Length: 148
Image 1 (cartoon, rainbow, N blue to C red):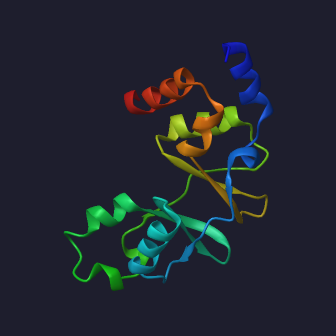
Image 2: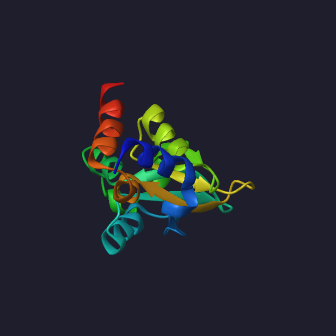
């Protein structure tokens, strides 16, 4: 793919084109074990945490791995105890270029896709973007994130 074609792809595709729609979620009161079951059953590494349909945090498999040493009986604890608060998001209409920019500048591996009312409609991870970018462009995105 030429650089011109890649730029055209970044400008013409939207977050809605590449997102995983309606991802499985947890509430703040869900247990860590419930979230881990989602990781396993859906083969994912992040579960959005919602309150009244709006994302408030994302629990990652890394959060769980790091919490194991500090929390006795981790599986029974609510996800709100170990999830990092706050979210990084885009809208379904944002271009793929914007999505890549948010990933790069925020230094995250995934972004939530929220509608105008702030409700979760999808999630985008590197694996969702990789098929539409060249190896060179994907490598540049990852390098920019690691270096910054």
